[in-house]
Amino acid sequence: MQRTLVIASDHGGFSIKAVLAPMIQAAGFNVVDLGPACTDSCDYPVYADKLCQHLLAAGEDAQNGQMLGILICGTGLGMSMAANRHAGIRAAVCTCEFMSRMARAHNNANVLCLGERVTGPGLAAEITRAFLATPFEGGRHLKRVQQFETVPQP
Ligand code: RB5
Image (cartoon, rainbow, N blue to C red; front, side, top):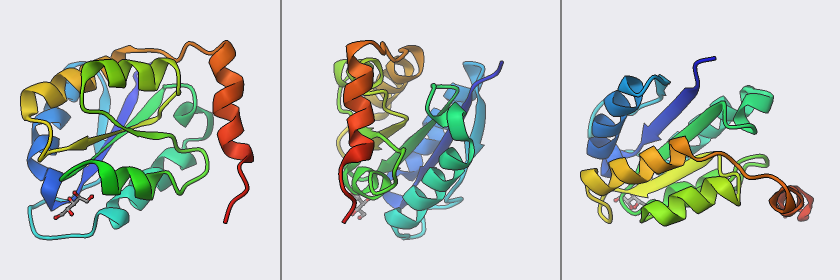
C-alpha cells in the first residue's frame, strides 16, 4: 500500500518544504502538503497542530510508519516542542542522517523536524531519505516508547 507523508512548515521552513515535497512524491509517497502556501510570516504552532491532528486522525497508520510527518521551521525546535504536546506524536529534531535513522529505529518517531537555518537542502534531503527508509525495530524499544504515553499530563 502507498505510504503517506504529511508535510508543513512556517515561513522559516518554507523553502525546504518546497524542495522536499516533490522529492518525496517522486519516491512514491502520497504527499499531503498542509501549508503554508507562501512565505508570509506565520505561527509554527498552528502548523504543528494542524499536522498532528491530521496524523492522529489516521489512527494506527500514524503509529506503524504507514503515515509519517515532516515539520520544518527555522531551527526545528519550535515545531518539535509544539508537536510533542500531542499524545501519540513522537517528533524528533534531526540534524544528521544518524539521528534520523535512530529516531525511526529506536524511538519510532512519526514526525521529523528540520531547521532550514541549520540544515541546507542537500542535508535535509539525506536526513529525510533516511527517515522514510528506516523501520522501527520494536523489541526492547517498544516498551520504552510506550512509556511516553504513561507520563502524567500537566
Ligand atoms: C521564525 O522566525 C522562527 O522563530 C521559527 O521558524 C522557528 O525557528 C522556531 O522554533
